[in-house]
Image (cartoon, rainbow, N blue to C red; front, side, top):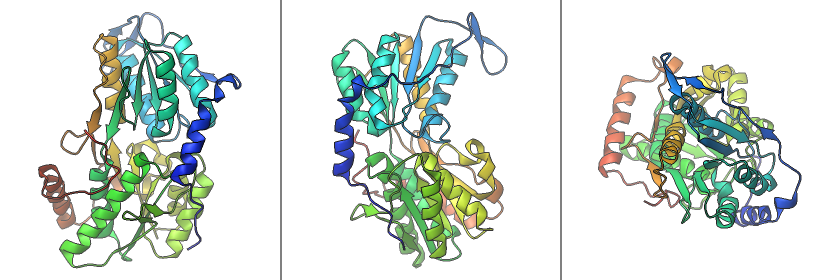
Length: 370
């Protein structure tokens, strides 16, 4: 396999450190989605009275249309606008150097709660929170930072384990694959779970399904190096398909859309397990290739954080989505429903129950700590 260039954890740390010096950069583009004045419509046609609260967010570099974690976070803010009557706004980060100035810009914009999307923003959020101690922050896919940042986290190793078991049980070639954007815990935790789910399938079924693209023990494998390059995702996926992989899980935001494109062009040789948002709905142009999605309820977590802050109940107690609290899960099979054997569906329900009960132990070191 053509080796994908790897971004080491050290390199990521250096990049993040540079964000602290970026405040003097050019003014970030403001992608304000302003609320209507007066009232706003809620699902079902009722009206939410407008309240004096503004919730804002800074996207990661994949942008608001990544069909993944940025889009899910924005959906949570849109729900807050609709149901709570708050104003909402986002600013796009074109590069990692935008994180700090974007966060500072929203502080100046009098946002009641500022949400940073993605673990790559941890250092920038910590810096902004330290400078603006009276400002309330939340961060998706990272831990809480005292005294004013709430972590919104997800144990996607659990749901990824189900994804891996599904992939192994569905594969016709006996080869499945996964790749990520960067070697950071919110990415590799999915991949760890996926590999361990395949391994568990092999152990319980006496099979030998091979995983290409990730070694959960070494913490090493195929990485695109960015969240915003569908071309890289397509190239990596074509390499996997050429090696015989027929179920592939990209954990790479917008880069992962290239994987879906490659699967679509393969003429049925490969299917995709998407992550974060149900890909069948969020990236419907590729719905024909989505076997399922390893989901995390970012929308719900963001909505709850905004609701608490708007009601003067902000807390820095971290939230962790799990299989037990439905914060992570496996999406419906949609067009693949009739193709997934009934016994495999039943086994997935049993595996889920065994993870929740603790009978199955997932060992990923990248799981968030409670």
